[in-house]
Image (cartoon, rainbow, N blue to C red):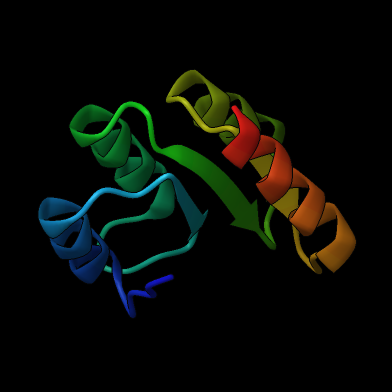
Length: 92
């Protein structure tokens, strides 16, 4: 497992490695999570991406799924739900 303090570092990690799963927050800097989702799916279509947000809207949910998100979860996160989503994503 690796973590990135910002979206640029996440892209650097993706450039240098392969990932089965990414967990992104919609509110990221300097590139927001929705744009980062698109970039991840462009570079690594098989990477499963779970989006999380404290500011859910119908529009962002639709946009995330349109761009290839595996799941869309809201904060505060239910850890058991997150674990289940991770298990399902990794089994895909």
